[in-house]
Picture 1 (cartoon, rainbow, N blue to C red):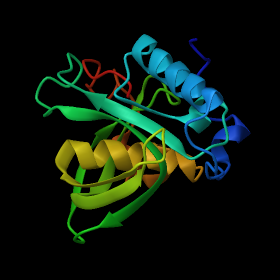
Picture 2 (cartoon, rainbow, N blue to C red):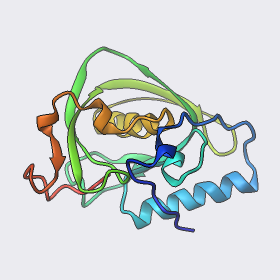
Picture 3 (cartoon, rainbow, N blue to C red):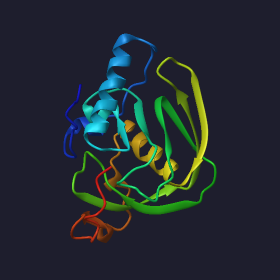
Picture 4 (tube, rainbow, N blue to C red):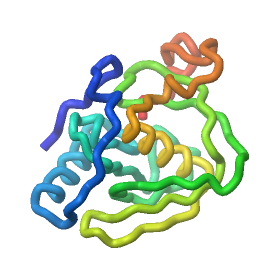
Length: 175
């Protein structure tokens, strides 16, 4: 089922999400399927449960190839429950970000270039990966939603935040 994506200004997006306690349930599987359907409908590369008003620490992300990000390397489709992020260096990379919850806008956002993430899949099996580049950016963006953080809160220079068309970025879609 496709769910409504909350938009910036909705106070539910500012909550800190709660950890998942029980894995492998029919309810959890149904929620993940709804998230996948919603992400596909919105043509996103990631989605966090709080974006569809579910107060749980769950993110999904990934794609083989993307018309929206033709130069981005593939990111394996991942369901990540109760994620933990650990930067592996202090090196940051800045890049344009958008968000399904902040439609039509873009911002120049710093993110850690190289990190390790860990968590669980839908059945409670441990996942651990070291990633960099766009993959690292996507997982950081989605995990921010679990702590009530939207990417505009990370923009350091508000001259680099605005409507895609005005910034000359109309060709870039929302994430």
